[in-house]
Length: 363
Image (cartoon, rainbow, N blue to C red; front, side):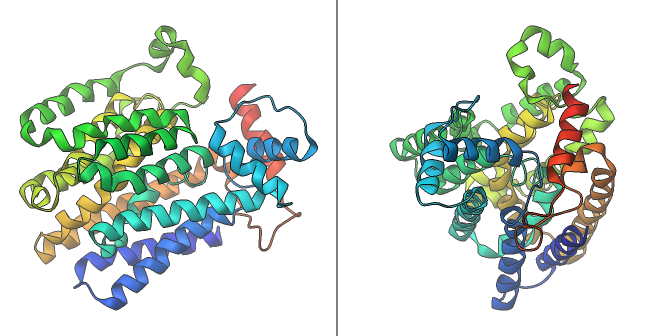
């Protein structure tokens, strides 16, 4: 728990940067915290949801065996290159984490590096464990989205569609990124956007079993987000807060760029629509959520100091409660204790914990 506690503490302190004037010291500190967050994912050893299947795939490449799962070509190409160079699996894991770190940093630096002050807190409150600590391929696809977002902002659709095609070479679900079109086009449809929030909220009551009976191909994620309405609201509370804060400062955000407000709007709608599955909702929301955290920063900074304090205090309180609930959950067995390639390489018990989780899910 020590590594997680350090990140939690740093994230809380970093979020307080919204209460002070922007400065070189503040930017330097938030970059360090941002780096520490990604280092946690990069240096994990037998920790998280995805490592076992990817390590088995990597070992099959080394041995020249055929693997049971066909991954996307870009991921396979990079893995084969590292195998050819004689590197082990954890070099692949670190490489993808570094790519994610640089791409998200590049996106934030396009607007304001200081916006990173709230990113760790919001990301941990949303889907850090199911993305950076859980899905290497999809994280790479989101990284490509972050790099291609400039083309979206300039309405260079050829460049952006090309970026989405590259992202799909890492994970086919990146095709959903094409819906980012609405991030720019909903500026003149404000009331329609709010109407969609209202309509999509009805999906919070949707039964997962009913969805899978109609669309059985969606059953592969193997996890239920929440059993009831209250649980789903609690799980996605951060999306609701980000949207409400951004909505109160809508005119200011549109003055910076319309995509910042619309990302918060779109993230909430997508979460509502797919709230019956934590895996699907967190994946589809993530690219738009990242952009919405930038909008949240601008929105919070435009409030008076007392209001800023109350907003950040409320989010920190929610964050600490959610971390407590999360770490007490059975699914966190693959995250606890945290093991790193620096201190625990060759001495971990991650395999036993992974089998424990998989047996509980698929027995």
